[in-house]
Image 1 (cartoon, helix red, strand yellow):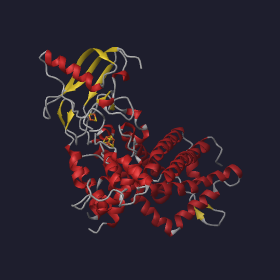
Image 2 (image 1 turned 180 degrees about the vertical axis):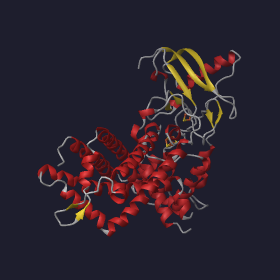
Image 3 (image 1 turned 60 degrees about the vertical axis):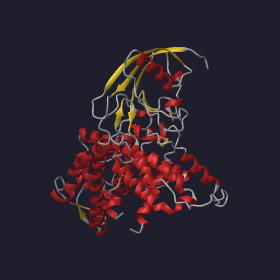
Image 4 (image 1 turned 90 degrees about the vertical axis):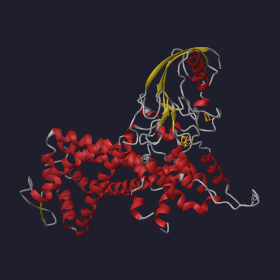
Amino acid sequence: MNWSSILSSSIGKKIVMAVTGLFLISFLLVHMGVNACIFKDLFDPTDNGDMFNRAADYMGKTALIRIMEVVLFAGFFVHIIQGLILEWENRNKRKKGYAVNLGNKGSKWYSRSMGLLGTILLLFLILHWWHFWIPSRFTHAGLENPILLSNNRVSHDMFKLMTVTFSEWWVVVVYVLACISLAYHLLHGFQSAFRTLGLSNTRYIKLINALGVAYSVIVPLVFALMPISMKMGWVGF
Amino acid sequence: MEHKNINLTLKVWKQKNGQSQGRFETYLVNDISTEMSFLEMFDVLNERLIKEGKEPIAFDHDCREGICGMCSMYINGRPHGPWEGTTTCQLHMRAFKDGETIVVEPWRANAFPVLKDLMVDRSSFDRIIQAGGFISVNTGNAVDANAMPVEKDKADASFAAAACIGCGACVAACKNSSAMLFLSAKVTHLALLPQGSPERKTRALNMIAQMDKEGFGACTNTGACEAVCPKEISITNIARLNQEYLYAGLTADK
Ligand code: SF4
Ligand code: FES
């Protein structure tokens, strides 16, 4: 049994999914933390996204974060490719299906739909990159006028780009739907990752289940509130 | 429990052999006692079919008391029928209403090819057991039963896992056709006991390798297996199997 045969076995593939999944979960927390800076505007109307832009500027200039960005892309890539392969392979293990299906009698619909939810998230991700990541790194579309931050650094106005992007209804709707998909994806994925990594003590399973539910509700909700509050004008200029 | 006789419509999967295309056949069965087991109902139907000169329905069974795991039937969309923690042979006709239509299918999974009608070939399970579901024992006199101390909780958990009868309902219910609940029961049974420790690492690695080779899918922790298992094997065992596999994968010599 060498490394590759262990990692390519059925459990090995799941371990890869679990490790990359947990890494992406930890990334989401950072992403949410940085973006939640836009909510400073709720308490201080003169902020106009300064706190968020400073945070984004910091992320852009810090070497460690830029290195992690590469790791993050690798994580996304492996998680997506492995997930699609797993879904495809597993579907092919039953060439002839049932006339009457077990359906929801044994498992939750979202547990059985991780491939579908993941595909929705992948499509969203492409849109999301096109909205924010590609302009901020490459094209600078919508970011033509740099601003002076309160810490005297000159930076892109990512906050402005957000308000412009989220001024359109369809964008807000798509982002909220993506957050709902994310919530269900996490609801299964969070606890499943720990089980795959071998967590079997009843005590910890209970803790992880509770943490998983809390994470799957709170994180997507905070994300969903960003486009909503910008569209509603709660956060903006 | 009130006793009565009921009439039913059965839609049963008929398939001549592994190569042929199967289809559903409809049978009307009348005057079925609610005290009968599901298999007895099939016996009544088969006797009638034989008398009529028709081909009886082939199905697997042996002990008819819930211990051999042969009676694989996928009844109304659920392996072993509507009752929890029950094998098909222990399912009684009082689980059904008069006039009900019951759909009976064989287990569906590439690793369990249909042999005839409701019978599937489950020898892939035997090969998985041969790959690692054993322990080394010294020949000679039997060892004194109390010579090896075992913690009570572990003995209980091991015993609960040993209750698996290898029926394959977990595979039949799983959207991935994964045999992980079965494997996890076998691995847990041995891993929790000192007798299982000599082959601890090779067991997990070899049994999983065999499972993959047989064409079962990868577990995605949906929980359908646990919900239908007639022996109520816990899905926690799958986490333990993952743990055993990870440990063996990280520390095995070669
Ligand atoms: S784990 Fe349960 S469902 Fe699976 S083979 Fe064993 S007894 Fe049958
Ligand atoms: S016939 Fe033996 S378990 Fe049903």
